[in-house]
Length: 365
Image 1 (tube, rainbow, N blue to C red):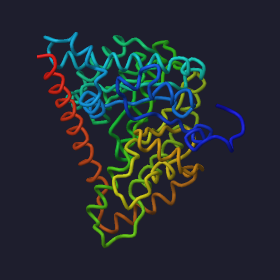
Image 2: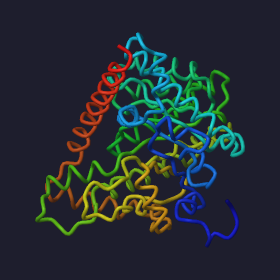
Image 3: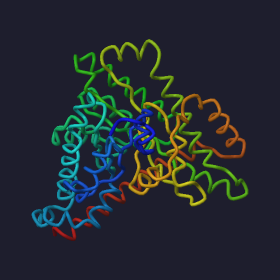
């Protein structure tokens, strides 16, 4: 869908601004020829898709399109059966996006699958599973999601050096985001030194948003209202300023000259959790070039209906840092908040993965 931009809806306008919209959901019925995914792609409203254990847990518990494969897997070990189900969905999604991936010069059409979250604190296991997933699924537009824990930092350059596209997830702090970007650059250097192709390599850094506000708002209490998501938006904007700084200068230019592409910030968890906040607040306030925003269906629908699009990232880093400083003066220890969120995030994904295994077990055992 191209032409007069005044006729393009807000989701399409984000793409025009330089922000890719990715669907933060997957379900077997979405992948059918008349399903949600082909419709969103045809409408030029999304350019990729992300999945995680929580998403698959929900899909397996509600979508009867899995019934036939579950019958075929009867008698299988539940964990193996879950991986078989997830891999089929991800393969189908990759194939749905493949024309976009090719036509865009390998810049759009990525689909993410997460390594077993139970291995988030084991570098060697993360590397081994990431390599296995990428080679087993064998799609150039696949991204392997690696939790941005300390052990995950060690896995990132090793996977990139092997040609694996990496989506680094569960990022909450600017400092960890900077460490992830440095790990990305290290991976590019290793691959370049080995004579590998940098132009085919892609990566995003998934920076979580709404969970920061949920935690900070709880700390401050209602006495500090009115406040409009100051912590989460300022935190993300400070991360974006770091992105602009890291991917500039002679060191980056040398890698870019060899075909490397920036590791785009991806805004995750952008549906609002607090009913006092505008339902498209995080999407509007974090719109900007060379970024990704991944949204569940409800947020997609809301933004299509009444989102307002303009660049609200470029040049906002200074003000964001001042806002974060004021929060610190109010007693908010953002470093501690983000550390807690990382642990909680891993725990939630582990619990969802285990719940999905249990759901599958009800059908195959």
